[in-house]
Length: 263
Image (cartoon, rainbow, N blue to C red; front, top):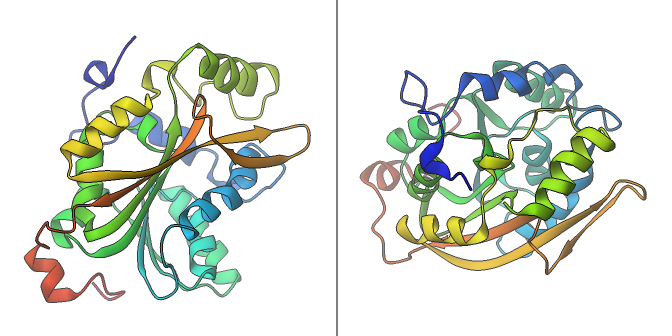
């Protein structure tokens, strides 16, 4: 099986991203908020993802960063829970759609067209909670992204990620089933070789100073239009990590106390 070491290199600017992957989603940005369109699975998964996060950390008043926010689906849900949300993405169309949708609904979310590496350099340890959903399988170096995510949260802060497992079942369900048989997502959205086994994710997290706290599978039923958490992470799964509380915060974080909306 291919692993992260066989993936393409990051882009010329040093960001842990590929223009081809960004273009896939940027091209669909105008349809992001169509609950019956090509992003329907994300709309079904979002309440489950939010519940997994909300049950494990305090959101009200917390400094929350959503990395790879897309059109703002999870960012808006986090803001409605009372979090002070910063959300970043490298797809310009997605950020534009996210800003417009939040404005229409009166939500104050700090959307930025920026990479996680840029924010980690300027605001280390600047957040209490970080979410990164359905993104790790689209970056060239997911192990390095885990280290970047760890640098963005304060010691004792939480990192939540969701991704896809790599095994025959996930290939049948997430690619053959979702993309080719049921057309739940556009063909070519996922590449099997980029899927991440839980053991790989846990190893990268440990190397980044993140301790595992919880893992859960997500079961999506397209016929009943429902999603639920399960104990089976064989296809889609969520993971909760906590940064080592003994790790010292970066000087920028001590000086700022997080990220302001004016920075």
